[in-house]
Amino acid sequence: GTSYYEMIGLSQQVADILSRNPYIDRFAITVGGGAMNSARFSIQLKPRAERPVSAAQIIRQIRPQLTRRPGFESFPTLPPAINIGGRQSNSTYQLIVHGADTDQLYAWAGRLVPEIARLREVVDVNSDIEMKSPRVNLVINRDKAARLQLDANGIESTLYDGFGPRWSSTIYGSKAQYKVLLELDPSYQESTDALKVMAFKAPTGAIVPLESIVGFVEGVGPQSINHAGQLPAVTISFATAPGVSLGASVDAVKAVADRFLPPTVTATFEGTARVFQQSMTNLGLLLFIAIGVVYIVLGMLYESYIHPITILSGLPSAGLGALVTLWLFGDELNVYSFVGLIMLVGIVKKNAIMQIDFALDAERHQGKSPIDAIFEGCLTRFRPIMMTTTAALLGTVPIALGLGAGGEARRPLGLAVVGGLLVSQLITLYLTPLVYTYMAALFSGARRAPVLPGARRAAASADCT
Image 1 (cartoon, rainbow, N blue to C red):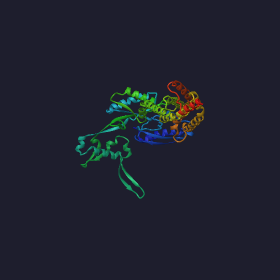
Image 2: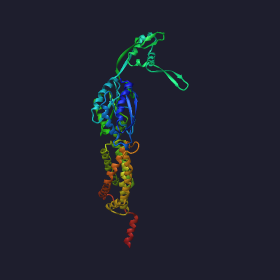
Image 3: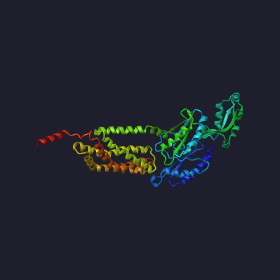
Image 4: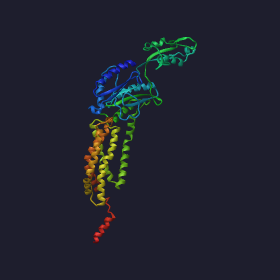
């Protein structure tokens, strides 16, 4: 029930708090967008090089300052790097609760919000259902209206003339145009008493007071009735708590909704949370298929069943390094860090391929033992391995530091690549030769190094001589 003018005063209080933050460059305020009792702030931070803290840390700074203010609720939100659908809400992620019965839906959704708010995995829990908005229900006496030749459309048109306002005409000047708007004096729009003094002209020519054919019933209700498809819906939005991943938050919220809601009311995620939940469902299968495809390609390349396993043995160390680095710097496993993990698969395999390619060539064409072949391969390919890895590492450092426009959103990608390269480089230089040697010893009975026909002829000539 907060008016537009009162909302401007409350927004000024928030603006004073944001103005005192040294890391905020500027911000814009939109009051009344969608609902008169709401305001939205779009905040522009200073460049990353001029502030020692991240955007998430700035939100943690201003959140307690805003919650201490009476008269309004505030929800500081860090927009996701990639926003995939969803509805406009006060927090980043949305849970849509819908059902056929509106009264039952609002009752259960109102009870579900405090249950989700008790979870440690989420913060800034809120919903778009506001059952405290004052309203006046106008009940038309159909019999009286029919006797006066009035209908609902005529009554609605009269109300719009008074509270619209309605554009009635245009005054054309020499240099400008002026729209003429028809409405009641603003002093009559501050309370419901203005409805009792309204009257309109019936088709019979009589002046009919509005209260003679319309009954006024005051109460409370929602500002708007939202829908998901064809069913009434309530959007419950939330954000992840500091240090909590999106997967843990989604699982916790889903568990509470499934346990709390009746069968007639269902809950589904929307936007980024829904895409994340769908992607995590088949992530294990997709990872298995990807590794299987890589194994087949490497097996065809080296005509071997065992050495693709040797090449793939360095991938766990790269994944471990990427995850540990993200954890140390307080970043979550999001879309950008997933891209970094995919990049690591190609970069880390490169080290093992360069070693094993040389070792297999020496073993098959020069007749060397597996230990001698991989030892010579490590010595010969050590310099190109270090050069290529160092070039990739140094090229990713600016992304890991969050430099450039929008660099803070891409920072998890750089951290994943840098951490994965550092750990895998230290491990694969020792792990790959070791796995190669043990694999060769394990399958030595089933696989022998082929001898070329030219080598057989040279041996026969030496015996004759």
